[in-house]
Image 1 (tube, helix red, strand yellow):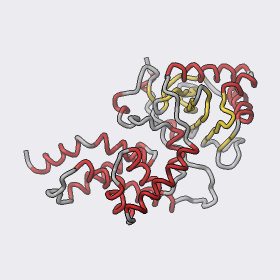
Image 2: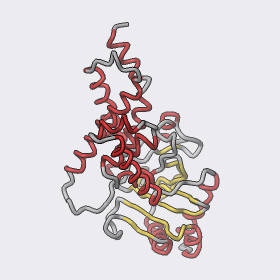
Image 3: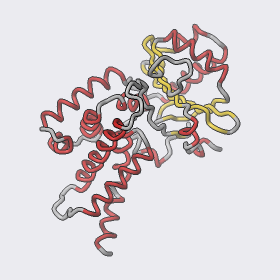
Image 4: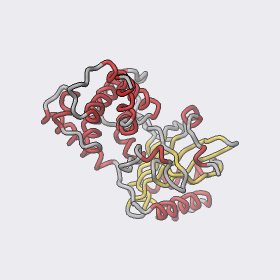
Amino acid sequence: MDENEFLARRFETHRTHLRAVAYRMLGSLSEADDAVQEAWLKLHRSDTSEVENLAGWLTTVVGRVCLDMLRSRATRREDPLEERVRLPDPIISSVDGVDPEHEALLADSVGLALLVVLEALAPAERLAFVLHDLFAVPFDEIAPVLGRTPAGARQLASRARRRVRGAAPTPDPDGAKQREIVDAFLAAARQGDFDALVALLDPDVVLRSDSSGTLPPGGVVRGAAAVAGGAIIGAQLAGAARPALVNGTAGVVGMAGGRPISVLAFTITNGRIASIVILSDRERLDQLDLTVLDG
């Protein structure tokens, strides 16, 4: 085995972990793959003979690549006044269980609601939080990536942590109960039962959508009454609903004419729906792999 082949094999043992890091940093599966490929190119061009912890070295390399991609993404925004938070790519799995390919991506229950909040963080905050809080990278290793001191990196992570805790509810662990509540929500919406919907929703529920439609600026609706009213209207326009796991929690894929028209991700907290994320962009939906729902 030559040196390049040996290096490639070592890299492959870390690819799944690196893709998980990049997905949390970027919220995009395709961009995550690009970041991992860039990490491989950097590894191939570097002298790592003195690197004792290759996994840690590669993790910080991917972090630096993702940081540059996030900063580039921010500068490419066509409308500086755009308030809408970009919705991350959903990971769709069968209700029978998460696909093995997705297990590492969802290892820490990185729900869509959490990823939406991460999208709203500044790039440096996101990197400090993701690397430290989700992957236990020490601040003295994060600091050089950010060009800051360890104390400065710690401060960024702390600031991000406060925002995440205040805006990203933690899902209840009981998957069967999650499904029961989501099914009840869909049934009440179809029946136009406003009171039943409100009873299923947390008073401070937040709905986020990428659809301009009739939603207010930012694609955000807050409060049980407003979300319930919108759900009744939406149910009249929706196609068939196929149950699915969306980022590991109970969700729904709306179908019409054999094609997906929406993905709904629910976060159930303390027995009520605390967050709903709706993806309905046609181009992004057409890129989803829904073969896991067949059968």
